[in-house]
Image (cartoon, rainbow, N blue to C red):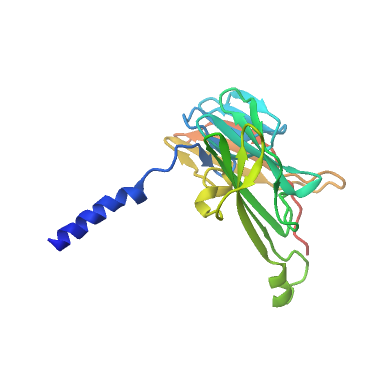
Length: 252
């Protein structure tokens, strides 16, 4: 009898751990987020900002230039972000209406440690993701640093250069006010956005991203060429060039 009760208790406890997560968009190949209804994909536009593209045809549905990077999506919102070019250790989150592409909320600055930067640069790492939470948005971020000199340093110098910090913040959609949220982010908190990497398959569709390193041109910005493709049954449905990423070779 005791054994039967123990087994029953196990079956009662399972739904607490097996419950489905809140419905949200699906990040794909570290580049975009598919809408909840799976009719569109949100991508970083080549011309700057974010764009919504019809998944079946590649047709442009809307474009928004208030932020350049994706952080997640819900059934109503596309959550985007952008770093501050004048203050590298801050960023802002922008909420965009998923249907119309119009901006519905902008956050105040989210502050990072003094040593951190949101820019893609050798020796620094950064990732962020966001999810809708009623009238607020929960933002997770993680910043890191590692030795970025030339020759191999001593273990002491390498250890001193290595840093890692993370945090959670809450952004009020109506006021833009940012307040700290309790706790530290887990890897699952980054799942809503491309920072998680995302999947390369969704139903009968396969997603591909190709990134080409730039040729060297003195004085010209070094940007990679990023191409996003949607494939069905082994045949390409459509392809689109996205915003390139800043690139510089590591020091010798």
